[in-house]
Image 1 (cartoon, one colour):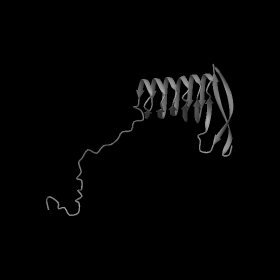
Image 2 (cartoon, rainbow, N blue to C red):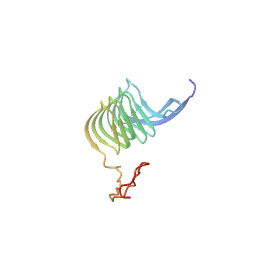
Image 3 (cartoon, helix red, strand yellow):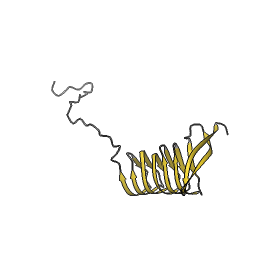
Image 4 (cartoon, helix red, strand yellow):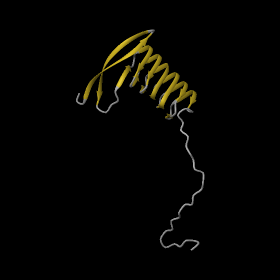
Length: 164
């Protein structure tokens, strides 16, 4: 297909105590995010995934996911894991402890069961969230000026001001 390029990525995946080096050939289109790791629909994986970059899960994963980039969770995904990522966008089911350094976006029909720690959380209507939420870290202090300032008044043409 035009506009596609093949990119070779190398990373490590730990499965049941063994570290396995993986090389994946990924087909990307121009403007699409580069996906470093992918667990497809119908795939069951038990272990630890550690990557830099974007990880997409559409299957079943039991274990841990670590990425400093983005984690994309598809609608059919079922994840029972400890997750640390930069940004998480989920349409699937997550059970476990989730930490996102930047933000978490839960899109319908997502289900989140467990603890969440992130500075920013957004949820669409139809998302189910059962668990604890901590947003304290990363919350910015906003300085508020409480002094009152006079506000100018605009007088429409043809009208006179009340005191003059």
